[in-house]
Image 1 (spheres, rainbow, N blue to C red):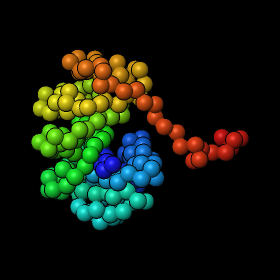
Image 2: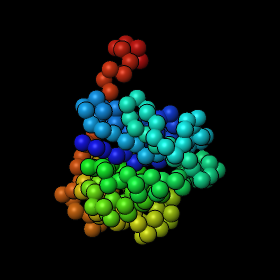
Image 3: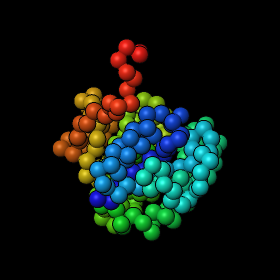
Image 4: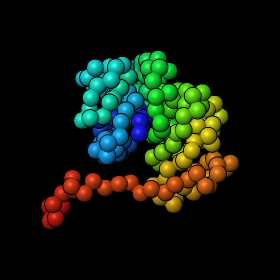
Length: 200
């Protein structure tokens, strides 16, 4: 299966929080299972990663595009990644994927991929990673949802929640959401990478 992950930040931008590591671990496991995995991401959160931009590179078997952000000031200070070259590559490649996994849906990346996935009739799933509530950056989130966020959520094949509480937030923020498409999957734990017993 050809799988595309779409996330604002990826290895080695660990300062981007939990999602970059989550996506890396998930993609690595999918590669190990024999899937063809691609990641669309940006070239950094607080600083630009020192790696080739706007073309695919191999990251531990994961085909990865680090799209250059238009402004690192906007990215680092306002968490507003704007990978200007993403639409060019996505328009050429998206038709080749079987499924798309969008992580953190209120982003320029998610909006571009949603529009193209809809055009090419490619199924996608969304995993907000706890970002659905509008308590923080309320007006920005509400505006994004009016423009495109609501459509991203309502047209997804599945919405992934890590807990019952998170799934309840989805219904509160998106009241028209069909509960049947919400899937609860706890965040995975990489057992081999946990500290040995007695060391913590």
